[in-house]
Image (cartoon, rainbow, N blue to C red; front, top):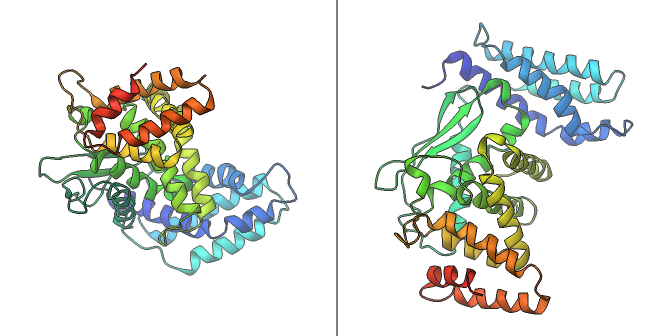
Length: 355
């Protein structure tokens, strides 16, 4: 169900205030230099996030954007006064407050801007091995829908049989922090890379966390996203170091989330270990090859190709862990050759279980 006027107003105010806050994080960092135990991220955690939780805990009586914006700023200012009395942070907050109030809050914030960016980043990855007109890359996805929720999340419903797929952002106002706002492009990127531009996945009929889609591909998304932030800046992504910080925090939280059982952590950790052995370029090539292969490619012998891939990689890493460096390098060179053959996916799976 779409957000009502008051729910939408909360999201609009959050996005407006966080957009301006990003422009002042460096100044906040400078202002905390006299306090060795503080930095800009702690100001956000202790003051801004606390205010955001209180601000978003109850639906407001009014949907007036200006009034709500002043309320949120007042709560942040109160936390700063409490935590950082007589600090230069107060001066930076005053400048930030003025910047927020100098421009009107845009109503009906449009998240499709970040959706398009996420799609673009994912498409760039898969075009390394797929043509631009591949069915994987031409699937129709509806503009993101936003629903009120008790738990912040981004989810998608992939429909890979000529129907329109859907992405839903589950907006939990008391959980919508600066980190949530900053990571919106990454959330969309992960949905496209892991669920929408992939081949058919085993979990699509009954969505649940899985080691490949939600762990291994989360690791790949994190690595590619940080590369675009720091080494190949995308023009639509600003505040690169702050974005890198918060996407790292998000991925760590996903690994620590007990509700996802061990599956996310298992896939993420095996991807990290595998990349360390085979190096980033080969890791990316192998991962994308597996991602564009349907889960039932080897059925009935292997019911779930993607889950079996993670299991075989784990065993392969365990077997090669104590090999001399020269033997490891020989295996990496062999793997490079195997995935360049006409039967690359079969050769990969056979390679991973060879003695």
